[in-house]
Length: 192
Image 1 (cartoon, helix red, strand yellow):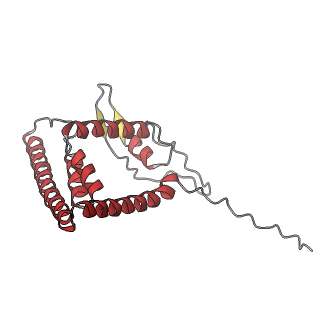
Image 2: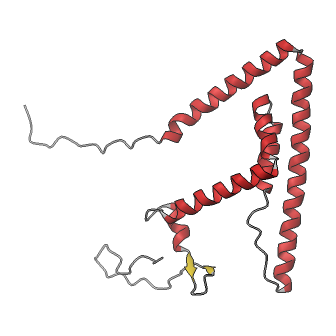
């Protein structure tokens, strides 16, 4: 028997992203693989050898992170000095400090696979290739950003000048021009 009241319709559950589905599984598989590899190496040589390998990785990672941090601080202070002197700052397109720090962090994490990946990230040609790949991917994602997304906010904040330079900016409006009673904003969204 129905009372005439409509049955409530619940919005469709948003689909879970692939990253949220597979990232925990990938981390669990990585941890199991690291532990298995450590036991295989410990069985082939000795537990003391594995301990020395892990300790050496930790110390090397700490040295790499310290060196990359010093280099980043030096680059920052040079850039600030150039700006204070009025000279145009040079854009080097990334110097790999972030990848060096990531490599040092991976070296500090106990495990042989993370150590191998960390050592791989310390090789300059690998750093350059990964930097170019990340820059292209980020640029492509920024160009195809849908309205209202995080990437779109960055796209709207850039103003392209006729000479090709990009000027960062923010629009601040002092007055609200909304008509009373209408729920819509009469102003168009910021253009690209």
